[in-house]
Amino acid sequence: MSSSHPPSPRSTPNMTPSLALIIVGVVVMIAGGLGFTLFIPMILPPQASTQAQQVDQLFTFLLFFGGVIFILVEGVILVSVIRFRAQPGDLADGPPVSGNTTLELVWTAIPAVLVTVLAILSYTVWINTRAIPANEMSVGATAARFAWTFNYEVGQETLPTTLNFGDLKPEIQADLTDEDGVVHFNNPKLYTWVGQPVVMEMQSQDVNHAFWIPAMRVKQDVLPGRTTEIRFTPTMAGNYRIVCAELCGSGHGAMAGEVGRDGELLGAWLIVFENEEDYLANFFDPAAATVLVPPDDPALLGRQILASGAYPCATCHTLDDLGWTGNIGPNMNGIGDRAAARAQTTGDADGAAYLEHSLRHPGDYLVPGFGNLMPQFNPDPGQPNYMPQSDLDAIVAYLLTQTANPSN
Ligand code: HEC
Ligand SMILES: [Cu+2]
Image (cartoon, rainbow, N blue to C red; front, side, top):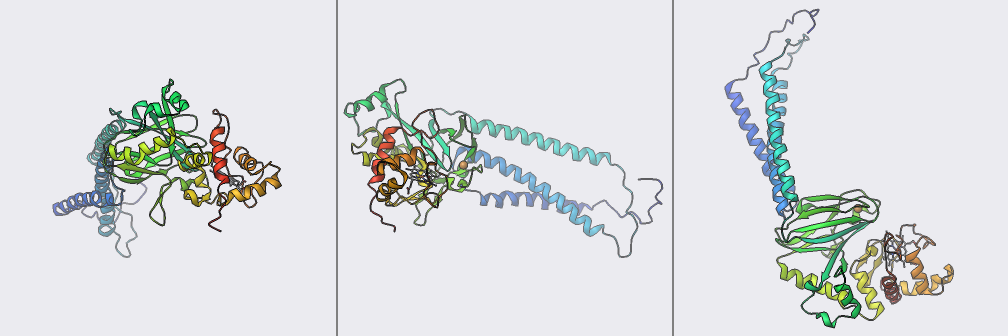
């Protein structure tokens, strides 16, 4: 305070609160803190993994202290505004207040202790939720604008019980016995069962995405050019939304699992079965059998490849036969009829050549009314969006069978 100011004419009000006020204040602070920990977690998604339990415990702890401090700060503001407000007509300065060493020590020491405790607790949770458990199951995830694809493998030890190794085609047998020893297959959904630790090995085909399962309380960036990991162990059977948590372009919202009009699960979901038997019977064995015993008919094979979600066509195209509902690209119903007609305007030899051209070089000519938004599916494994020629042939054969036009 500068000495040029005249001494304040206003008398110093009694600033020491009564014991009763302090007791009421402390009770309100603690009750408020507990109230926050009671009600705020109600808006969280289900707590369905061991990681979720630890993260929520830490969050509840933070809520309690955050709540107590919030009520203290707001309470002091409220009391000051009411108790120490100026009387009508009183234009004088308030009383001068100089330092208070005790107060300063207290308000430095309490936060210092709190922050240290919180840092230790947070670090413990960080370490525990990322610990590598025994028997974990590894699932690949590929993020591409605008869909998630989950990558599984089946090896000789994990063959479905309905299949004999000796009955498989020679080329499949060779895949199962070479140095890698597995056959890969994809699915647009992520499957596991209660109590099974999962590690996600994640890659992006284009831009930054982020893999988030709110009910598991895990979130991890997925970055082009490198593999990132995240671990969780589900504790409750159920279906849980998977979300992309990094704005990745115009179809970013389509990378989140949604419930369709008839209650069907659209897009990316985590399906947690009760136990391993249910997982094998309802997902793994049938899915593995379809890749280990592919149909001979190329159109059936093409349908199987597309239905598996190996390629993200469903995000952008509608096709009733496969339950696709995307609308970024043209409707695929009746594409078998249209492909031959389009071939005449684009100079392709026939419908099959037109479809192949549409997949290998989608930018060469655009279907009127649509933008150049379709990814190019490349023949070389080193390129992004790799689509082997055998897959492409099967997909083209299947699309040519889509001649009936049920939707218009
Ligand atoms: C990111 C969105 C997107 C994805 C994913 C996508 N497409 Fe497309 N597709 C489009 C758009 C937009 C067009 C129209 C522009 C053009 O002709 O390139 C199109 C056009 C096509 C055409 C030509 C259609 C016609 O009516 O003549 C075919 C065939 C096609 N897509 C098949 C596929 C298949 C099969 C897949 C999956 C392997 C796929 N698309 C994946 C957006 C997409
Ligand atoms: Cu994304």
